[in-house]
Image (tube, rainbow, N blue to C red; front, side, top):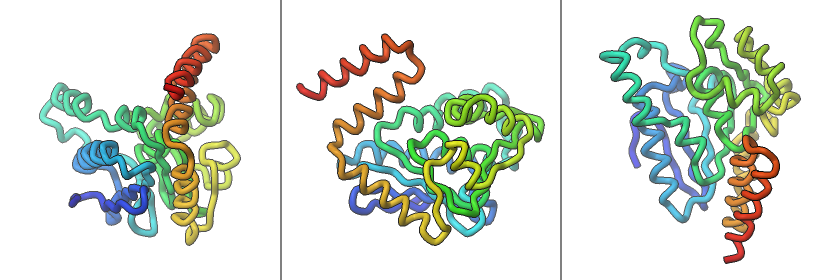
Length: 238
C-alpha cells in the first residue's frame, strides 16, 4: 500500500505504521488522518496481522501534534465538523479490534501524544518528551486527551499537564504510568517488537476478549462489568 504521509510494512504478523512527515516533526494533517483511517481498515481485515506498532520517521519526533498550518482552512465550521464525524480517526483507534503499540521518541505532543494514549501499550525512548500543550496555546485537545490522560495517570497529574502545557520526560512518564516501558533510543523498536511478539504468542481469541472486557468494563459499575466479563467468557467456550 502506497501513502503520501505514512510508511507501511507488514512483517510476521506485525503491522508497522510510520508517521512520515519528518520535516514538520510528523505533524498530523488531514491527509495523514485519512490515510491512517484507510490503513487501519485494511489492517483490521487482514487475518494474518495481529498487532500494530506506530512509530515516527526521523530523529526528532514521534509527532509534534496537529498540523497548525491547516487550522481554519476548512470552508466552514459545518464542513469541518462533518469531515471529523465522517473520519473519526480517534474513535476508530479507541474501538480498533487488534492490540496497538506506540513506540515514541522525541517530541510526542498534542495529537501525537493523544494517538499514543489511544494505543494499548506505550514504549518511550529516553529522549521522549510527552505533553498536551493545547490549553497553554489557547485551545482544547480535540483527540480525546482530556479523557484518556486522566484515565491513564489520574486526574491530578493530568490536570497539571493540561493546565501548564509542560511536557514530561520519559522517566517521569514511566513513573506516572503514561508509558509502560522506557528504552534506549537504539533499542526502541526492538523492544516494541518484543512486546508485539509476546502478544502474538498468546491465544488470539482469549487475548482480544480479555482486552475488550477491560476496556468496556472500565467505565461500567462493577456488577455490570462482571456480568459483561462472564458473557465474554462464555462466548469463548462456544
